[in-house]
Image 1 (cartoon, rainbow, N blue to C red):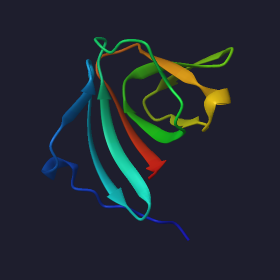
Image 2 (cartoon, rainbow, N blue to C red; image 1 turned 180 degrees about the vertical axis):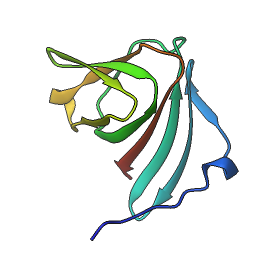
Image 3 (cartoon, rainbow, N blue to C red; image 1 turned 45 degrees about the vertical axis):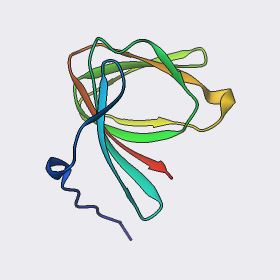
Image 4 (cartoon, rainbow, N blue to C red; image 1 turned 90 degrees about the horizontal axis):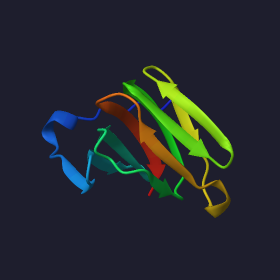
Length: 104
């Protein structure tokens, strides 16, 4: 069974947790569903929380351990949980728009 979400992101306000990043989100069924916009003003940053997402627009480079991958429009993104799987991201195009699903 596939779960489908209908999210009215147009009805939600943008918030900006760090420079060069803004997002809209809603918590639903134990998940946080986020629409995130990144620009080149975003600093390189580390994150230890797992992410599963889908690139809606643009290109982003993600470094996870010794591996670097470039994700483009249409790519699925999966980054695992835990301190052993820390990653950092760099915006390659402007803007980059990604839809994320995360456990709350």
